[in-house]
Image 1 (tube, one colour):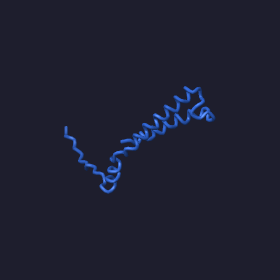
Image 2: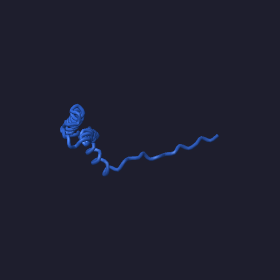
Image 3: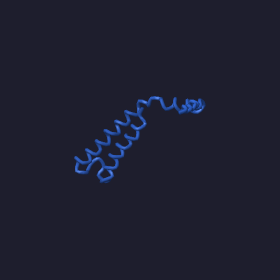
Image 4: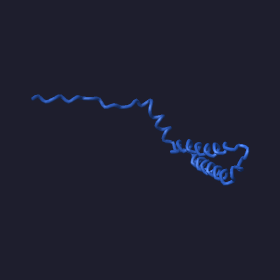
Length: 87
């Protein structure tokens, strides 16, 4: 039985003029304010919800009623959005 031929493929090399700028920009470390702000937002959101429930829904802002929940959870969701950009 005859031996099958081996295919010769060229090795792919990405274009040099497109990738270096993108790769260099993505490897920058995140600024120091980003994790500090994210942790602060988590703490503020949790504190807001705890104060709201422990005060029998009179504090922090009584006229907002259940919108206080949106403020507390909104702070926590905003912190998750910041943490998704942390490197």
